[in-house]
Amino acid sequence: MATNQLSVLVNADAEQLWLMLREPARLAQWHGWEMEGLDDEIRQIYYSNVVESPNHLRLDLEMGDVFTLEPQPEGTLLTLTRGEATGEWQKYDADITEGWAMFLQQLKFAVEHHPRTPRRTIYVDGTSAASTNLWDALGIDTGWLPDPGEKYELTLNTGATIAGKVWYRSDSQLGLTVTDYAQHGDGLLILARQAPLEGVRQHPGAQIIVSTYDLGSAAFEAIGSQWDTFMENHFPDE
Image 1 (cartoon, rainbow, N blue to C red):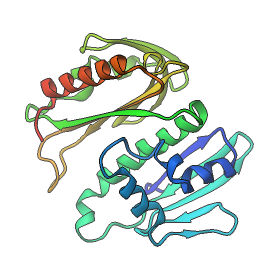
Image 2: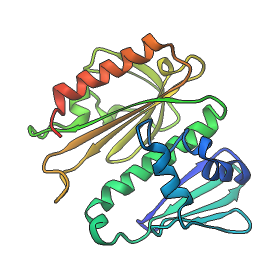
Image 3: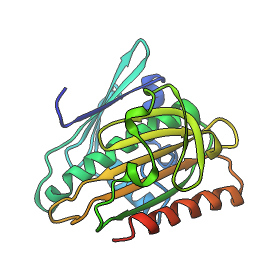
């Protein structure tokens, strides 16, 4: 597979995935995270100069990125083929690709685990002049983690113990379902390491996205406070 392609196999039919790509309310349940301007970002990416195939199996975005949907016996293979970055966007291209990798996993999770439940998200990021490694800062030995789909339990250096299943993993990202992040079922924790990037980031960085479902305000705020404190202690730089 080409290196500019990102794919996830989703346990859903193509019609359901197409709705997740075309309805604003459904897009907001997986694209990015809650922030001021999310609705504008969704409109710009998914509705500005896009081309829909008549069979609803291909969506061409304005910047050259293309979604394709391939029905499979196990569901639908959703592939994003990245367009070629130009101009000012070139220096951000690696970060954008990593971001799309996270979002596709969030889409898969939303469809398979919470197709009708609105999410609430927590997002924190930062960089470390001390060249801190995210896995080390959290106390995660990725070499001892089980394979995707298998159960895990971890006590993080934050003091929290989390449990669920490994959702996905790559050299730079780790996705974990977390039972405490949802009132029913589980939520999703995505941890992403960021390498220094010329013209963008002088030091290594970290991104953390938490997708929660039906939590009370106190529980939600406690999780947010925990991750804010972690970032301030280990990745405090902008």
